[in-house]
Image (tube, rainbow, N blue to C red):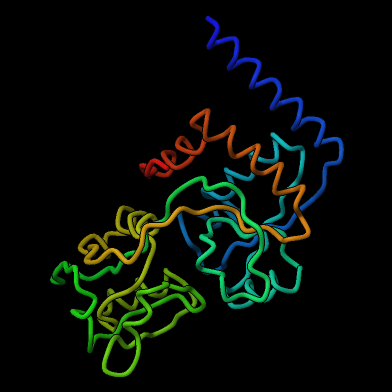
Length: 253
């Protein structure tokens, strides 16, 4: 009984803190990449949809703030964040932006991101990146892959950049690429929903890293509010429910 009471007190204290912040409700811009990156973000009947939309809808309910999604290319999005035009970039690990002029400040972690190498059905799984030497591997222009990048270059992996995961999958299907680098959640979505990709399979895990919200350094108060909202959503299982809505089993933090 005491535990229930303590949980209730914690909940209402959180609600009071968030409601008091909502008196100063503001509108903030959220970066999403065009070219479609389902199930994180995509257009449905002309409207923004996906995991990021659902998460920010709930954060908006908890904070009183409004969040406007801005669709840009990866390269343009990075520049817009550095220039201060974008307030938030969701689903980021700090290591991916450490070379940026404005690395940003980060919310608490709310999920994991696994980046993998995807191949066609005849491809063999491997634990050795050197197995890909001499092959052509697709990458979304502007995405970074940490230590795995030391395997790129002459005599190693030849990297071909394109604007989106969707374009890379088409090229893999038409054998224009040997492999592609892609998030496992996005890969699973396309494989489940597009028959042409049913034979594609993960052949190598590049990384498994926690992700958070990258926020403009000048938005320290917003970071505090987003941290409170995300912490509440994690405690109530709401993040897990959002991922499950799109057929994704979220890895535990």
